[in-house]
Length: 68
Image 1 (tube, rainbow, N blue to C red):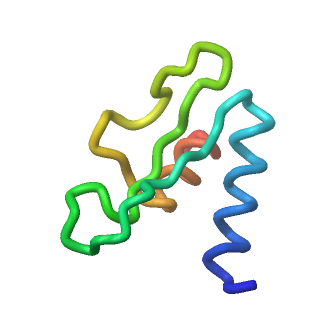
Image 2 (tube, one colour):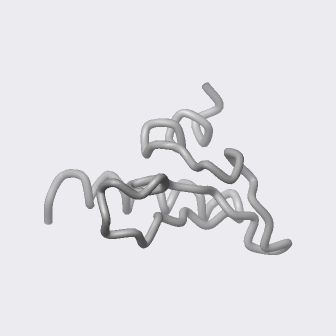
Image 3 (spheres, rainbow, N blue to C red):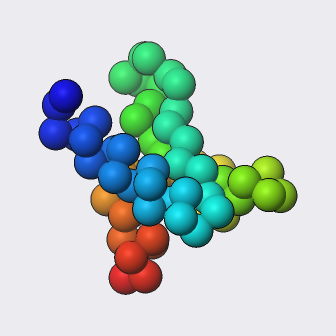
């Protein structure tokens, strides 16, 4: 398993412990505005928890979940 996928799975588990779901953009076109972006979704309310609709990087998600 590639290191990025391992890290992504770790962040997914961190999010799940807080009742959040880590979602990744499904876009496959590198020129798309949200290609490679991530979001944290509140599982109970089905709303964005972090960041806004433009998404963020895996680093951003990990920092948010760590409280940094």
